[in-house]
Amino acid sequence: MPKFTFIGSNASGFTEYGPYRFVSGEAVDVPASDEDTCRRLRGSREFEADPFDHDGDGKPGGSLPDSPVSLANKNKAELIKIAAAEGVEVEEGATNNDIKAAIEAARKE
Image 1 (tube, helix red, strand yellow):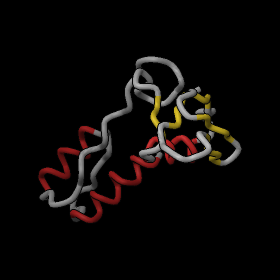
Image 2 (cartoon, helix red, strand yellow):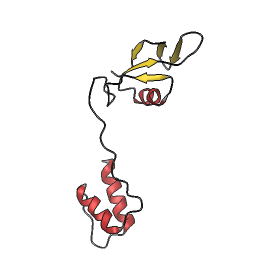
Image 3 (spheres, one colour):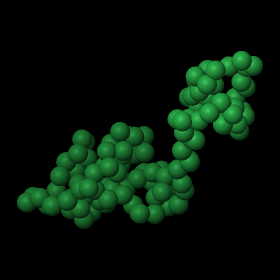
């Protein structure tokens, strides 16, 4: 489980976030399955995630996958190369928009 520590300041020394109660300076386990809360806590300046948990699974180490290559402002040759690298078949005569749609569909699978 990812651990988050409340580092914000308020007069009471604690805050509640959803079903979780955070006392200033104490780490609280938040289940990784509660993705929405984990994402919001990571984006907040009032909370600090465990600095050794790089992928949010609650254990030290790990890494997030690289972001896919952007398809914006790519010419047809570049799109075909990206499609081939990602295992997407491109039909002969496909337009740039067709190629982009095929790549994006494959990324969602």
